[in-house]
Amino acid sequence: MTNLIGEYECRLDPKGRVQMPVALRDQVGSTSQNRYVLLRGFEECLVLYPLTVWNELVAEIKNNYDPFDEDHRQFLRYFFRGATEVKLDGTSRLLIPKNLLDYAGIEKDLVMFAVLDHIEIWRSEAYGKTLSKKPNEVSKLAKEVMGRKKQQSPDHVS
Image (cartoon, rainbow, N blue to C red; front, side):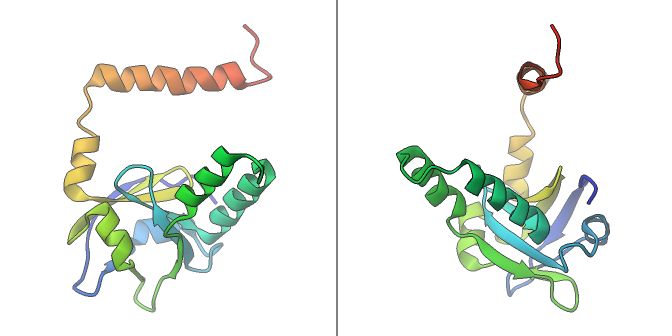
């Protein structure tokens, strides 16, 4: 699967379903057989993983999990809470469970934001606020994230 990209404004129907944008469906392809895992994000958003990506992530978590470490157990409880397998219906809609809609504060308008291998689902207003950081703050974050990668890379020579 390629890295997912794009930002899509969507709308919930009265039954809590959202149409998956065609561009996102095309990017995910058939590898996940229209199956996803939806869960709470760290911020007030939802995170949608194609099933194949989810399975890889869970394998990585299992590989690093120490059941005797309290922080690990707490992380698992927090991370997996509300995780639900969802599938696109015949008209490419996802039914989002009410408890997850409530968590993210989504009532009608939402944004699907593709990030690498997953999709964040935000209430439109919350997404706009998240992106309102000043450019110098974003630049500082970029330096921190990208600089950290260089420091961790065993191939990097100073």
